Image (tube, rainbow, N blue to C red; front, side, top):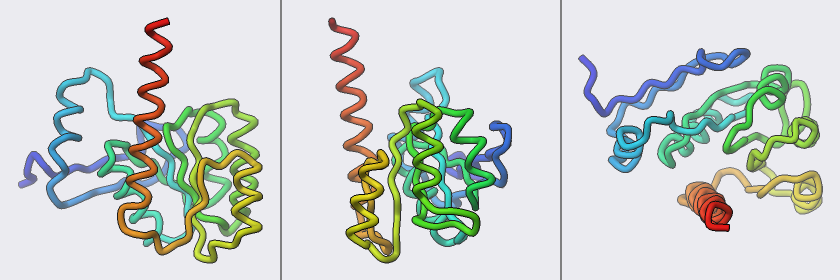
Length: 171
């Protein structure tokens, strides 16, 4: 029997997405409260990585920040999703079995969606950092991540977008 705090999110609601994500420990109460208070579903974030452990880690971070993760393991799976959906966040590894983060950033830019793209790299290479930023990445983080770094960036981005939306509605 599942507890009311067990969350299982399936990516089946999005055409082209594959797999599901299950988190079997209590979810933070603010996420549950937000889901109950709002008639809207929680926003989606895309996680693109060819490594299961990185996909799970990034997906768990999104979920804990109130973002429902959708998964792709390569560029072929991610490309139609990036083109069709305006994800709140796109978290991707620096390279996939069939491409690199630069390909994904170019696809995201062509889609004209406003997704915040964060690239995660095991090397933390400075030339790649500058290339990613020039192509429109919000940030480029070295993996393994410093504990709390990605949630801080996600929350700051959500707060900044929320403040921007509030200021637009006042004018």
